[in-house]
Length: 372
Image (cartoon, rainbow, N blue to C red; front, side, top):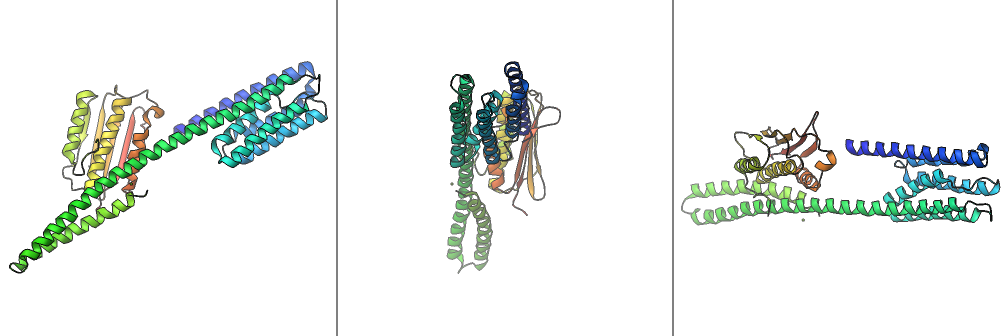
């Protein structure tokens, strides 16, 4: 989130510099040919629309509509008062940014209306040019800016939709995988209940004490099956490499050992005793596997990797850290972490992944262990 905010601030600052440069160049050009006072109306319009372009993320419909109204007013004023052709380059660029932003982010109907409004302004500028007065180059630039804004907006809209679809596909696949694991757990407990019920039926008449033991086992298995079923229903909100539902700390040790043979040294800390539900155990395994995979892919030069799994009264805490430097957050991000977060949150837990202070990366998850 901090990286996205920083990127947005940098992009806004860059746009501000470009707009200021365009306004300055236009002022010098108009002052040299018409006189500075002829630039003031168009310059004021360019400043207003430029400010709207810089704050477009807050209210895209309002800023785009207001920007096009100001641009259209500048076109009309240029025609009525015999001013230089508008929109000038700075105003055309700011208007294109507003149109492109709207096309990228708004629903289809308002996005289409704003794009059409931009075309109307560009066409009005063409119609307002007096024969023999020049300005055809400025009008052509206006049309190119509008077209560029629409194309850029549509391109970014398509990329955003593809990214959202890919992320949703990862989340759905993760939910389905966890649901399959929980299904196996429920089936295991229900099968045990059936077997014990059959045994109780056979021995009940001859040995009531053994029948009581079987009934106690049925009760325990039924309670665990109900808890797993509740988790399963919570996961199924829509439905070769996953660890088995029965994976334990020994599988985590094997996973870390395989990583050691190919990557940086790993320091592993595990709790002494574990009695976690199967879906919690497999999720812990999944967290460690995904975190180590990210280290191998993006930070193979790390000097030290730490895998810390600790047991709290009502949760399991997993933290995987490395000390690699020079790897950006964009490189570290990916669909694996999206799926991992979906799995952890489906179990009622939390996951945080991000840079550490100084250098390196940290993945920390808190997974409820079902005891609360």
